[in-house]
Image 1 (cartoon, helix red, strand yellow):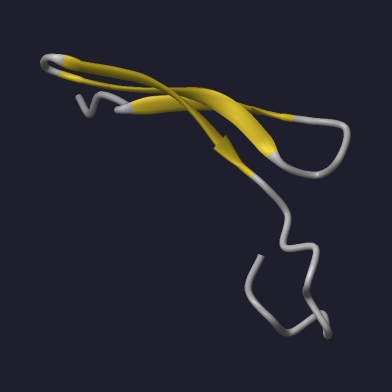
Image 2 (cartoon, helix red, strand yellow):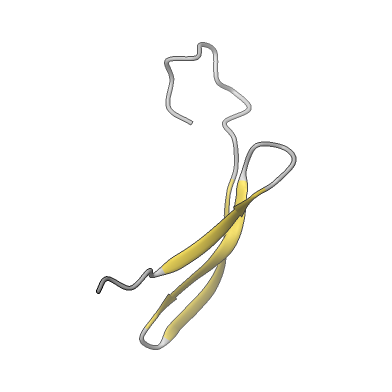
Length: 44
């Protein structure tokens, strides 16, 4: 069975907040939308 190295939840602004956890590492993470995005084809 595979184990997840992190979990995130979607925020109201379209980003994600969560936690990345590996052996001796445990950090809070945030994935934010690209506010400089010019077209819908550009990466998130």
